[in-house]
Length: 110
Image 1 (cartoon, rainbow, N blue to C red):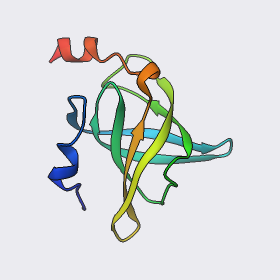
Image 2 (image 1 turned 180 degrees about the vertical axis):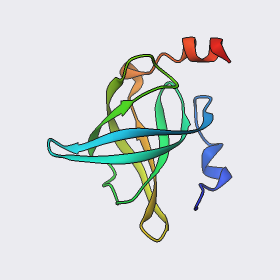
Image 3 (image 1 turned 90 degrees about the horizontal axis):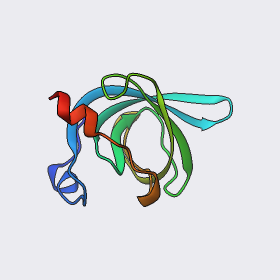
């Protein structure tokens, strides 16, 4: 499985937690895609998906356990999309400064 180069991972402004989890992306009212999460921070997520996304597009994302007891839905902007393998794209999603995730309870459990 393709992975993200470490140099891009280390250029972030927020501490990111490397993870292996799944989320659901809502690309349109009728289009859902699975996203394999690689990292998460209060400001966004990075992951792998089986289709390209357009940088600048808005998507919906639903995050599940282990981070939250109930599903959390957020809107995010696609800030990165790079093909890293056959039908595998590395994507970065930004929630925006005013829409950050509260991961405090998750980190207290660790």
